[in-house]
Length: 279
Image (cartoon, rainbow, N blue to C red; front, side, top):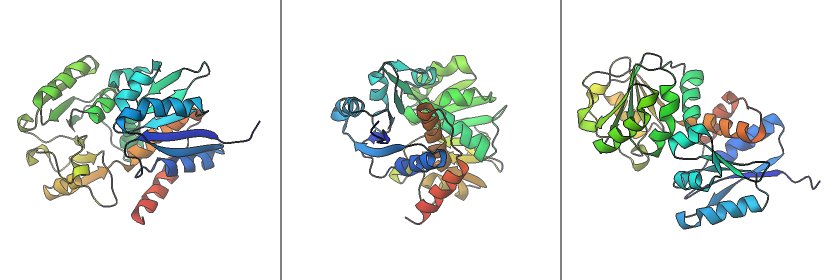
């Protein structure tokens, strides 16, 4: 045996901003795993060749981020049920028969953050999901499994929201609409799955979706409050969160798929917040 660490990494474009090497490095140290984790920047036209080259060179697993999650689903030889339902893959794992398994840990990561880290229970609650792209598609099934009273998907293009709702209708009470047609009453939980915060803006939704008890969650994250969090607070929301916890929890789910052990996420999340605040 060479004694060299097992190879893992994250592939996307761009990836220089990624916190994944920091997170998985802490997971590996905590669990005593010998593994390396590197960044692989691949433009869309190079994703397939770069990923196959990684695995041919002895790599065992890749996280997949924007804009390659749909392409990763096509590359995988087999998909987990949750990845197949999402139509997107954020984790690739080399199996013993040299076939690639594609999984999607985003929804599990979000649910674990909401329930375990933030103490938010969704049973019988009213949930508004903003956005109908890949981020929303990846979390819908796990959210519906928690038996909310309803999930309303709202999107700038109403047809996309309705189409997504129809795709998941067999799993629970879910409907779709445009931003201007959101029901006129406060929701228990509002999740921003759009890219608006990354672009310095907020979804064009009416403040009436918020009530005194509404919790707002932005999948985006940053050193300061996101634009969506600031908007929510300006309109009376008392409790806002951003996606640091989801980032760590989905990574832990990937780590479990690769290494067969689930790391403790609380100390890693605390270390990540501290590092981000001082970077």
